[in-house]
Image (cartoon, rainbow, N blue to C red; front, top):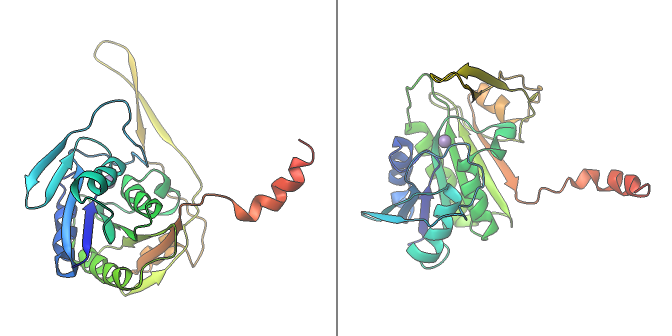
Length: 247
Ligand code: MN
C-alpha cells in the first residue's frame, strides 16, 4: 500500500483535515501529522527558535506545535522513517488562489513535499459564512491523488487544487491568477489607550484571464494549478542580463 501523509494549516481539529484523511483511506496507508493549532497564512515557515513537541493522538494521527512545514519534516524523519509516496495538504477552509499561495501554509506543506521529491497536492475549498461542505472537495482530492500516485508529477512540481462551492462541473488545469494587490490595516485603541493594528483581507480585483484559477472557480470547475518551487523569473533573465551591463 502506498504511504500517504496528510497535513494542513487549519490545525489538527479542522473538519477539513478529517474529511481529507477519510477520503484518502481507499488509496493507501494514511498518516496525519498536523499543526496543533491553526497556522493559516504562516507560509513556508520553519520553527527554528524553540523545540517542537510531537503529540501522538492514536490511530496514526499526530499533532505538532509548529507549522505545516515543521509537520512534514517531523513526519518524514520521525513518524514515517522516510518520505511517503504522496503528501496531501488540506482541505483548507477557504480558497488559495493567485498570489495567496505565497502566504498559504496549506500550499507550503505541499511545496515542502515537492522539495523532498515527494508528489504533493494542496486542496482548498470555497465556503460561505461558515457553511463548509467537504464532500465535493474530498471527492476531487481522492481523484487527483489517485492519478498522482499512479503517474507521479514532474520534478519540483506540486498541484494546487481549489474546489468551488457546490457540485463542480469538472476539472480545469489553470494558471495562477493575477490580482491587484491591496491591503486593509485597521487601527484601534486597546483598553490601555495604546494603538493596535489588525491586518484584514482586501477586496478581490482580479485581472481577467480565462485560464486563471479564479476564473475556473467562478465557472464552477475544480481548479488544478501546477506550481513550481523554482521561483526564478525565467522570462526576465534576459531583461536582467541587459540591466546587469550597467551594474
Ligand atoms: Mn488555512
